[in-house]
Image (tube, rainbow, N blue to C red; front, side, top):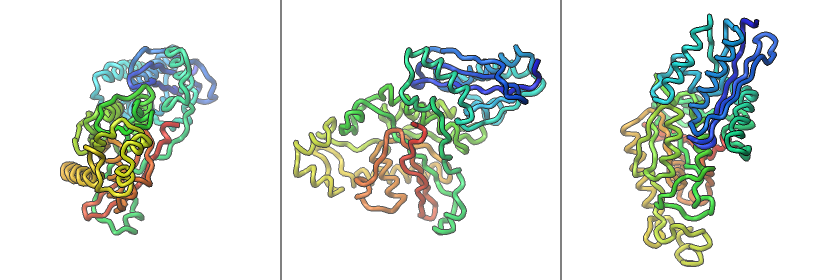
Length: 381
């Protein structure tokens, strides 16, 4: 009998919710010998449910081995913080699972929870992916969010870098905006102008959203005293679906703001770049060089800029000095970055933003700003 063991656990879903599975491994804490492995397909559930199920399976296996002390290691910040008692458990799907995990943990003399980077949880991750492969009948290509885990660059913490602030002269506590573009839709996959058309995420888009959500769940400062930071979305379906994945991961809720909606492309909605250029060659050419020119029946980038600036000011007035997650579209996100850089409208045509990419901009009460991150897609690798 081994008295001191390490439990490494993981879980995931391809889509959130989607076909899911968990993996858990129990190791001797001294020799690192593998003592037990557990994995199971779970049907259609969320990432967080699968992660909790992995923890429960790992604790149950440790109990079967007669362990007395357990070190739990997981790359889920949410589960680790909730089981350590530092974060509240508000989501109704999580509460009974957490209670079951606590019940199992009470049978040991000590259980300690620790967060580890994804790269250090590869054994449990592999088992979870094998379970998901069994559920879907095929491995996921690239498995964004739940495969071949690599250490991701940490998002900047809520407090600004003191040296950077000293150089810029910025004063006060900034409002920090984490800008998340929505996942893939059929329109984006075909590279068509997609503005006010209300299209949902594709299966890949839901997977991208889940990967971004998991990344944010592992980021410090997004849950404070058990409360998730505000998660604010454009009112369109593709952004609300992406935002809901984030809310599920953080234990928060989604609000919407009309100012974060995408540009109205008018009669170009649904056309490709080439199709719009062929349809209205002179107007399209002017539109690309002059932000005051609207598409036929649509909205100019100058109008978008004023709308997004008003939305930013309203959000800062309500949430000044806090961190917010804003889930939006290409043009509003570029516009917020443009404000942070104090740049002209040509930035809109020179800056690329991928699907489900993260960017960060901070706005200070004295009028200064700092762009901290642009187009980060490391969570999709």
